[in-house]
Image (cartoon, rainbow, N blue to C red; front, side, top):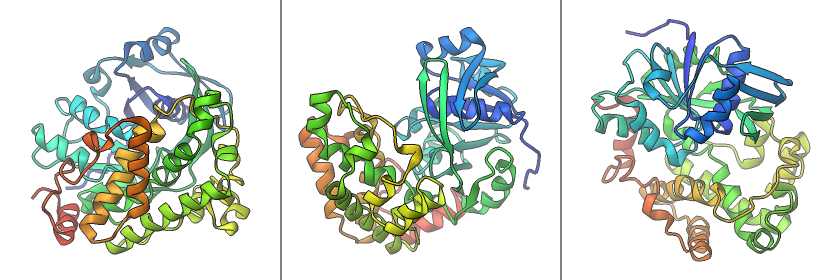
Length: 370
């Protein structure tokens, strides 16, 4: 039976950039917000002032948050929805954290999502026989914490792809989540949200091509505007073509990077018309002044390779589509950093999809664990 109750109270799991942005935004919209952070050092400054300062497109002000805690059950108790607002490499741990306290009538939503069946597979492994999850393809915001108790929201996404697992719950959960995030737009399944993870096609190559600059200047340049030159843009464009090709082989139609960024209001009409990664980022006002990482030990590699490029490669293997640019980027980043990103990556095995055919995967996404 479908649940049509309106969401009034939300538990936000993660007190980083996205979690603080969501806490401020949803508080301003009138929702009862409870904010959970795993790290005491992250939570303490917010708890000391009883909320979060915000600036940018939300205005300038202070959002008072009644519950700020390191206790997941305290944050989740009585919440209508549990929102995971953390990096994808933390999804497995976040799902494990909430699993003992998650009730069947609580919506479990992740933004960014794009980890396919990882959340549901983790919940099932921890005792939820028929888990239901939902997610958006990216964070609802371009945002950065400028201080331990302050977040700057540069832009709200104009279009967030949304799907549920299993997919027959998508429309029901979409209607309940729309009051929180009005830009949500349904796609057929959570497989679709994977291929809108475009950070994976532009962050790793741009950082890889600017490693010398990062290490010699501590990232003293604007990552997107200065770091993505026409030549770097060509590598991003090649990766983007592989992303689109793998999606097509799985029966999914996704727009190229320039169209996707335009739909989200992250680039201008000029960026869209130009059609290249270089055009996109040189016409992206919200990304214009974002500084480069100070080190290559950064989420542009640590998150976007194991939870972006490697899933693209794995799904390409499943669908029989070669991904040489993707695989080369992964290999060069491993050589440069000395890390093996495959060791903790979002592989088919990690998602519970090892040994399945394309048809098997699609049935699972539609019907769930029946």
